[in-house]
Amino acid sequence: MKRHMFLLCAAVLLAAALPAAAANDREAKVYAITNWPASGACTGNDVGAWDDMALAWYDEIAAGPVFFKDGTWINNNLRREILCDPDAQSPCDDDARIDDADAALIAVHGFDMGKHWGGLLLQATDGDCAIHAPEGAATDAMFLGDVDLEFLHLSSCNSMDDDNINWTRRMFADVDSATNGARLHIATGFHGVMAISAGRADDYEDFADDAHDVSISDAWLDNLYDSDVSYNNGTNGAQCPVSFAVSNTRSNALSRLLGERYTNIYSDPTASGAFAYGFYDGCNPVGDDAFNDPNL
Amino acid sequence: MNTIRKFAALALSVIAAATVNAQETACDLQARMVREAIPVSVGSPSAMEKLLNPTVDAQLSATFDPARAAGIVRDSLAPDTRCTAYRKGDLGYDCRYNGAASVLKVEMERGRIAYLNRTRSEQKAAAKISETDAIALARQAAEAVGMPLRELGTRADVRTLRVTAASEEGRVITGEAMGSEVHVRYQRHIGGVPVAFSRFHAAIDARGEIARMHVRWPDFRLARGLSAANTASREQVVAQVLDQLGRDNRCGSLSHVVANVVYARTAVIDGGEGASTEASETESGPSEFVPALMVTVFPVAQKEDSGVPQMPVQNYVFPLLRGADGTEGQ
Image: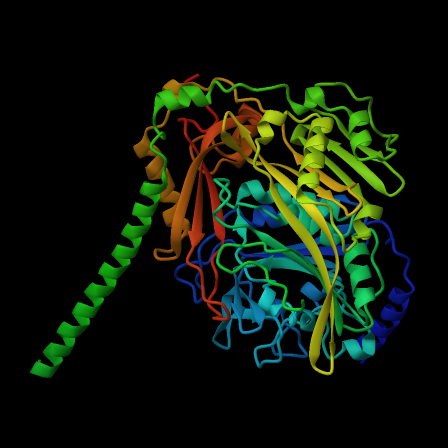
C-alpha cells in the first residue's frame, strides 16, 4: 500500500515532469544470455556476441546526459522471477529488477507462441524455461512499466511479430496501472528472426546514441534494419525492426512514437487502449513471412 | 534373464544406437553444409593476392566536407564550440554540427556521419516521393558527404517506413496509416568484395528532404604486413569454422549456411591466433581491414505460434590469413 501511495505521488510528479531529465539520474539495465549449457534444463544455441551488442547499447546510453549504468544480468541463472510481475505470478521480482529501471534491454532467444512473444531463459520455473509476454493466457507474466520502466528494447527473435502486434500493448501495464498511472512508454523488437554478430554491436551503439537526438522509434528502425543478414546477394532475408507506443488515443500514441526520445521523456501514458507502431513495409525476415500490417 | 527381458534390452539398445546415429547424421549434415558453403577461392594464394591489392579511391577522411554535407541536407549547421578545427585526413576528428532541431555528428575514426533532423522526422506525411527520386537524392547525398561512389555500387535497397495507429473499440481493433518515409540503403563493396558492416542510409521525407542520414564507412586501409604467402589453407579455414560453429550450434539447429569472402575490420574477427580485439588493437588498429570469410548460419525456422524457441541468425567472421591480422610471418 505504501508502495502504491509512493507510486501515485511519483506518477503525479511524472505527469508534470519536464521533457528533459536531470543529469544522469535515470537507470539503464541489461538482461542477456549468451550460453545455454547443453547440460542445463533449458537449452539453445550459444551466441557469444549477444552481450557485445547489448553492452554496446548500455555503454552508449550511459555516455549520454540522462541515464546511468544500473546493472547488467548476463547469464547467471537468468530466470522468470527476475522479469515477471508479482501481480501475475509467483515468485516474481520485477519491481526490484527490470521494472525498477527506466530503460532496459533484454537479449535472449525468443519465440512466437499464440499471440505473444516468449523469451528462453536459463532456469525452469514450474517446468517452464520461458518468460511470456501477456495475451490473456495463464502464462502471462511480463507486465512492465507499472513500477518505473519507460523504455524496453527486445533483442530477441519474434519479439514483435506482425501477427502479435495487436496484443503487444498488454505488456505495457498491469492491474496496478489503473490506480498508480504508471505504464511502459515505448517498446522495440523484431518481426521474425534477428541476427547476431560482434560486428553488429555498432548498430546498438548508434541506436543508443541517435535515440538522444531523434525518436527512439526512428533510431531503432534506422539502425537495426538490415536488407540482407548475410552480406551476400541481397536475397537471404532481412532483419526487420519494429517500434511500438501506447496511449489513450491514436494521435497521442503516434505523438509518443514519433517524439519520445531519451532526452525527451514524456509523462506516463494514461491508458494503453490505443497504440502506434513503426515498421518497414514488406520487410521479409528470415523465418517468417513479410511484415503484413494486420490493421490496414 | 527371460526372453521378454532379453527382447526389451535388445530393443532399448537398438533405439539407443538409432539415436546416436541420428545425432551423428544431423552433425554430419551440418558439417557438410559448412564445407559446401565455403567458396572454392578460400585457401588460394592467387585469390588472396587479388584481395590484397584492391583499387581504393580517396577515402572519407580526405573527402568529407561539412559545408557540402550541410548543403545537401538543406540545413544551417554550426560546429559545436567544443569541436577542433576540421582538417582533412584527421581520423581523430569528432564533432557535432548543430542546427535548430537537427545535428550532424562526425566520428571520423569509425567512419561515422549521422544527420538527424528532428522536425522532419516527427512530421511523417502520408504521401511519399518516388523511389527513383529517392535513389537519386540518396546518391547525391553520398557524393556530397564525400563518399567514394564506386564503393556504393549500383544496387540500392529501397524500403518504405510506415507508421500505423490503431485502437480497440468494442473489441474490434481498427487502424489507419499515419505516415511514411522512403529509405535508401547501400552496402559497401571494394573491387566487388563486400565490406562487412559498412553502410550508407538516407531516410527521405514526403517533401523530398533528407530527414536522417547514416554513414558508417571507415577509411579502408588494409592491416600492415599482409602477405598472400600467409594464406591459410582451405582445410585450416574449414577446421576453424567447424570448430566454432560446432561449439555454438546444436546439431540439427541449422537450416543452411552461407559463406562469402569479405573485407572486415580486425576488431570483428572471430577466433584465430592473434584475433582478439586486444591483439587487433595493439597490432594493427581496430579500423584496419583484412580479407576474411563471413559465415552466416541460418536456423531452422520454427512454425508460427508454435512456442518453440527460435534460434537467431549468426554472422561469424573468420581470418583467411594465418595470424588473423597478418602479424604472423611479417
